[in-house]
Length: 283
Image (cartoon, rainbow, N blue to C red):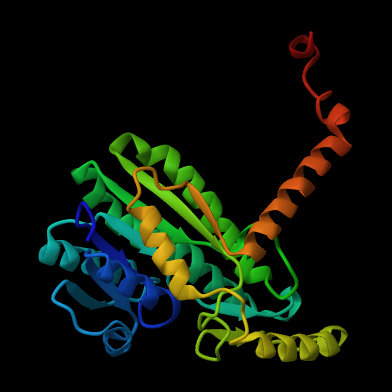
């Protein structure tokens, strides 16, 4: 049992990583508010428990987010940990993604995360304590083919969370960005992944090949989401939760590679970059 029982508010708890996080937090002795678009799916995924409150939540709806936060406080009196986990994946080359698909992807991953955080922060400020945990992705660190919309949303989450940390630390609120690699969640299932609506001949062969490859990857990802969830609860319960946690050996390699690339790009033009000040400033 934890030294301090906390109240967790978890989005996207109807399946995949969100359900694993909810189950791990319950096993650790915490109170859980588990939310999802389908209450029935959340109840089936997490199971009944006296310390569990299941609520409907479409994270793209700010009014619904506020109602869910109010209900959570009504049941447990506080929110100690917000876990922004809900998300989906709209795959495809940028030109083949419709504008509506791009807006929907960023709307869910970034603005949905902002909606729930916006609703929860006043509670945490009043408490003068709390943790905001957002699930990012290795695709929020390094862009790649077919992930233009997804990466745009996850890169946005990274920037949002880094900046938010500077604003809320004064109120005793900490933040953690989780950067998973490939885990055997349900993100690549038909229920969570959709493909570009448009068709451009120049991309046709590559799109077909990539669909086959991504479909083949589903259920074969190296990471165990149950282990990720258990480790995350341990970090949240620790004395100093990390500002960023890179989860999975593949994610560690990806982030390290990006760090080396950034330094190399800075070094390549360091003298030129450093020569651009007004003369009086340079002097």
